[in-house]
Length: 332
Image (cartoon, rainbow, N blue to C red):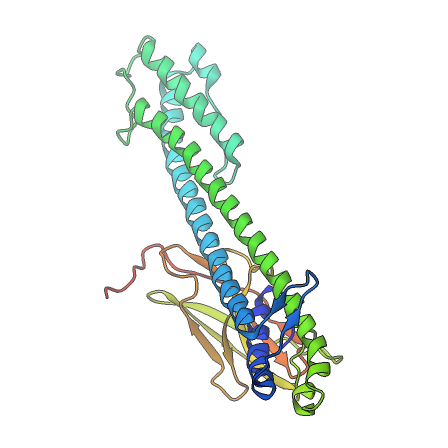
């Protein structure tokens, strides 16, 4: 294995750990200590602790992505509901308030994809205008206070506008949690990389009497060589909460394995991607995973990577899988 991005840290550390353990066996009763630039020493057990902590932090990042996705989904649902009521309110203006001063203040509908400020402004305008209509004289055919065709009154509409602002605040909170989780993960990866780098420098001197261990040092970077051809892959949702990925075979003579990597969200982000599963060359060419699809409406992005014995790799085109909003988890 080799470090080529966030997704490769845990698999690479998993190759260093057993090698380190073998070094400790032949050095017993002593053990191999790795000294870092800050003059601290790291044991094999401490490096395993680094691996476990980084794995937990990577999981936390995925959890933060899920929380942010939920918050964004809630915003979208609230905006769609408000837009429906907004159009019903404007229909009242169009039907009964043309050629009045009130009609001059008729707000224009925003797009559902508009940002917070641009979307909210016409909603607030409608909320305020609605209150003024209720306080004014009723034109023919209108009973005050105005109740929309779906039964909505001005008060609940105003509350929904306010609730949208809280939803945006929640989304920003989740975004900040994600930023902090990423920052901690990145610092942990820097420490892990430094530990592995100095491990590779320490072994040749301490284990000179054991050439097999020196020759089998795990790599940190790919060996010189070619980049493999990416394979074609496709992914579908598999009820109730999984995705099924099928991929074509690689014909590369140096093929070592296939990896399924993914991230939560509507696009593949190498910064947050993690290794979900690994297949050997002779395994059935498919992956089935519940990664990221633990709730209705969840979206994930996946890629299948071809990994060579040199550590060089190539990923397929990104595949998006969405769990339908009406598919529920099976009862336990």
